[in-house]
Image (cartoon, rainbow, N blue to C red; front, side, top):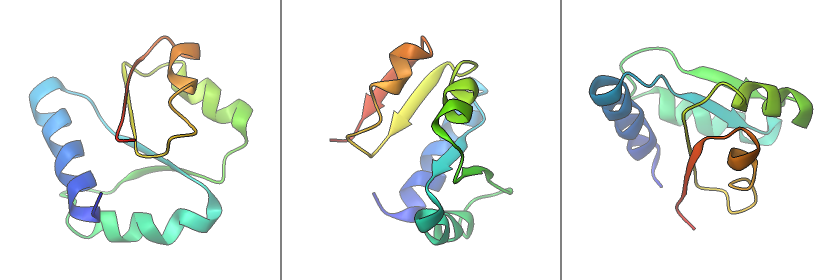
Length: 87
């Protein structure tokens, strides 16, 4: 996905369903979030470089898990969330 696509999707999910997006990324991907931030209408909620245990705790409160990383969709069932992956 392009950065604007992430921003547009997050904006749509919030406006249509009241879902606030949280961006989970490794430290090495933090700059990519800066590109997503540019077109976003408000500051991103970021979980960058978090340990897996903390990411799982965060996911325990989500209703929808949307990702573009093929290695992470398996985390959503652990959090009892609906999961969509682009790969």
